[in-house]
Image (cartoon, rainbow, N blue to C red; front, side, top):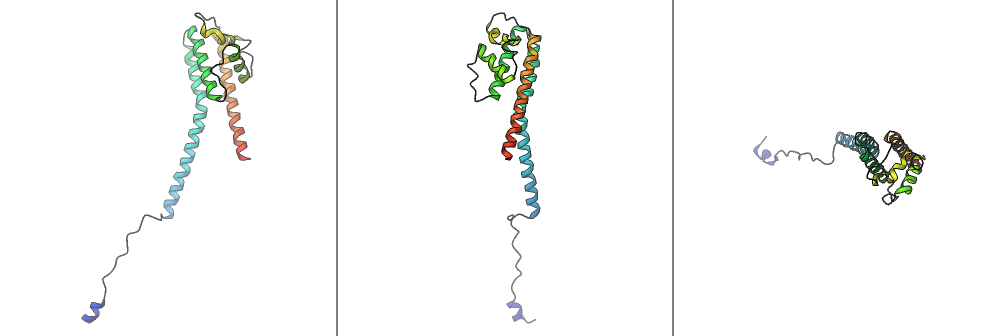
Length: 166
């Protein structure tokens, strides 16, 4: 090669660094897996939170068992109102007292244990200085009401899922 030909040659040009965009196929697969896992985690969390009230109410009911009789009626009333406000947000539960409150409990629990049975103590017991309640007779009705609400809520969820699929 002559020196004139060497001068005509140009320097070697290196290719530019690869950019991070567009991503390779492997990265898209990894991102889609993380996206799908994220959706499943969010759906699991929502489902767990929707059912969490029931387990929390059962724990609180067990704690109420260990309290003195005058506190049991107050705290059981508070527990029922708290659950009712959670599950029935469209119904104004706060002003319900006395027979109206007991009728609401009977209607939503599909029973008559509150208006005619030992649940009558919930109407006026919390407001008495020395409430006379039969806790062993009342407690199963409270559990039954909570269980009924749990079943109704689960049934409502499955009905909503079926309506969405239609």
